[in-house]
Length: 111
Image 1 (cartoon, rainbow, N blue to C red):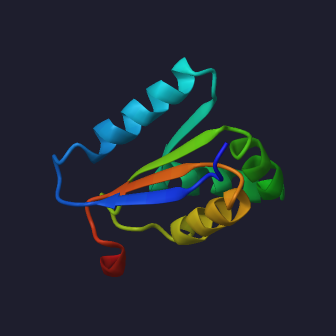
Image 2 (image 1 turned 120 degrees about the vertical axis):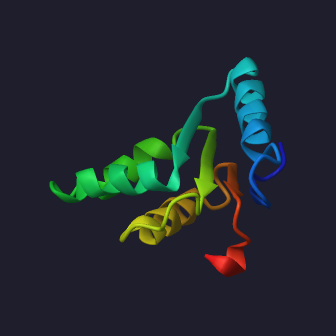
């Protein structure tokens, strides 16, 4: 099996980026894989909740057990404090272990 890859799709709204990510998720599920789906905001909220009891590392560990981790609509809302840190921590933990499709309507240079 090839090494997992992180891919990003950026482009204007209504260009089917989320639909493509959703199709990848359904295909993975159809093939017996597990999928986690987050927006940047929900990912940041997840880690914020776990900071209170210092269980962020455990939360990230549980999250990266999923075979596919979709992070959708980066940049749809303003980037909340901690959101960039949450994204970095998840991508760093999953690097070369899990596939992470990312979608955004903003080019990465514009975030």
